[in-house]
Structures are given as C-alpha cells and as structure tokens.
Amino acid sequence: MLICPIEQKVRYVGSSKNPKNRFRQHIKDAQKNRTQKQKWILSLKARMDLPIMKIVNKCDDDIFALKLEEETMLLHIDDVYNIHMPDKNHGYVEHYRKTGIKEKGNQKKIKE
Image 1 (cartoon, rainbow, N blue to C red):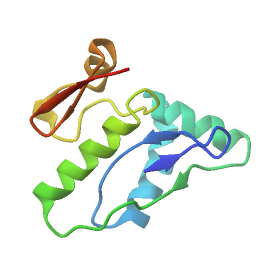
Image 2: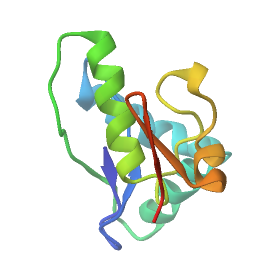
Image 3: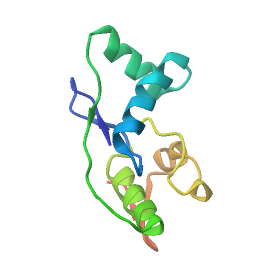
C-alpha cells in the first residue's frame, strides 16, 4: 500500500510480485498526471517527498492475494485513490463509497 507521508492515510492499495519495481512504476506513471493517484504523487514530488510503501502481506496464491487486497482496500475505502476494486468484476471503488456498503466475503457490512 502507498501511504501519504503528510496525512498518514492509505492512498493506494495494490499487489505485486515485485513491490520495488511496482513502486518505481507508480512514481514514473505520475508524470501522466491523469488520475487522482498520479496527481497526489506529483504533489508529493513537488514537496520533495514520495509516498511511503508498506507491504502488509506476502502471499504466493494469486486468488488469496486478491482477497487480501480487497479486504485491505475496504478498510481504507474512504481514503484510497484506487479506481477499481482488486477483482475488476467487483466494480469501481466509487460505488462502494456512494452506497456505504463494505463487502467482506459473502457478508455485507453497512458503513457506520
């Protein structure tokens, strides 16, 4: 996950087999300046700062990794700049924010 060094909020949740390369790719892609995440990273770079990368789980099973990623994203749903849920079939993050529903497994939890 990428954490804002200023606000200490989780701004992006993702998974990768090579986290260091993925982190570098996030920084490089920020030059495109299209998405909220890219704009955030550019704003940090302007302050001579970068996101903090924190690895929260290590997993060899891709299916289980997607589930862990989604659970982590749902914990931070109000702050992340992700566009899609980890499993693209689960839709857009904005839908989860607007409906106030956080899915965990087969249970639904209404945001308090």
